[in-house]
Length: 394
Image 1 (cartoon, rainbow, N blue to C red):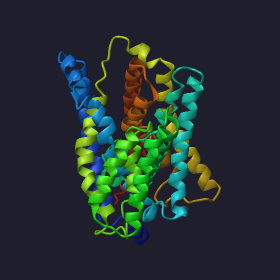
Image 2 (tube, one colour):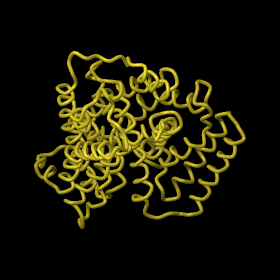
Image 3 (tube, rainbow, N blue to C red):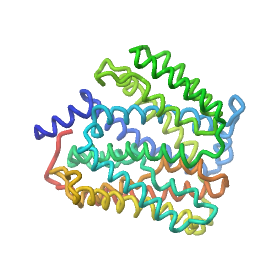
């Protein structure tokens, strides 16, 4: 491995945190595939009624599905926030010159898919779904990339990881801005007030995790009743948890390490099981020819790779950043298809974008099919593009 690349790894993550992160995302992606297939099979079997009823069973007055989507997924967003915080302080986003390539790539990977979706759906009842093809599922994308083994250069893993994290931030902003209907300002201000209190604790170097977790729960409850989606609390909380030097003793680092496995192996699989129970009827042709289904497919399969490639090419051509020496434009275009694996975030935004259960179900199917197509194309394109003889140490 080149000395410069070793320096990059040391700069990005403390110790083996990047490798640990990549390995967790790889395993999590494979488990998500298994859970999705299981859920689809169960929803279309003789056990469909019982299986679907399981997720609608009331727990403390709300369906289990609700607690997964509004409760457990907040922890997922907390992990995303912690990863984003690390990227900003010590990683790819800490140096603006290094950050510009994945930033431009992510920007193109959000704007072009949303534009293509709106081109087909503007002025219709489904126009609110424009945020659906903007998302990238980091676990699935890195899971597919990992299947290519040591032929994948480290710079490509870093590029895709940074792109996906920035993409997640974009999705969070979209959720907060465009999918909030009515705001109860009192509850919102209380939630933000608690966040301010935690920020003060941070600045006074209070490094005990308990007050931050208790405060986070209070933030979540008031955010849940404010009209803004409660999962945004996870990201806000991440940025008031002490980061320090980002070393092994940092609360942020410890929490990030602790959350990787429960999020990857419990929370996301539960989300997949609860939200991919899609009944596929005889009207499958009608499903995939709906304008919103076509918009999702066009956005994820075409818009993502084209947007990522064009905006990256523009940034490099203008001299704003450089393409890593061990990558080429074919590789960037190929990995752009992995950016088209929307899954978790796309399904999550679907639940916020639509109220009609039929549209939600059809949109989920379009997401799964499009993500599958994008993933398969990306895998085989990268397999052909990456040099067979070159192996990289990660």
